[in-house]
Every structure is written in structure tokens, then in C-alpha cells.
Image (spheres, helix red, strand yellow):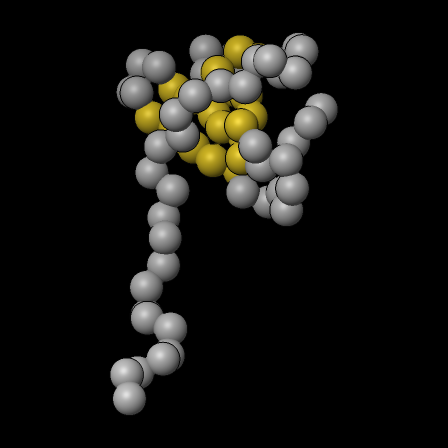
Length: 66
């Protein structure tokens, strides 16, 4: 019989593609450091365009609807 235990692995979020603007308003912000802050589903994203990097806030357990 095959081993049915879960693999010893984890997923890691590397990049969020897209932006939900259809049903949201006033959900895109620019910080004093010229970073862009927005959300997609349940992920808060801080995008640094100078470094082309994203940081994530993953503390929500449902979609952010603000």
C-alpha cells in the first residue's frame, strides 16, 4: 500500500498577479516611500516599483472587501 502521509513541503507566495478593481473603490494607496499598497482576495500587497519587489500581509482568513 502507498504511503498516505502528507509530504514535508510548504508553499511560498512569490508574486501576486492582477488587481481587483471591479467591485472595489479607494483601495489603492501610495506611501511616503513611493510604495504601492493594495489588496487582492485575502492578501495585502506592498509593491516597491524601484526594486520590482512585493511584500505580503497574509493575516486575513477571508477576502479583504474594504
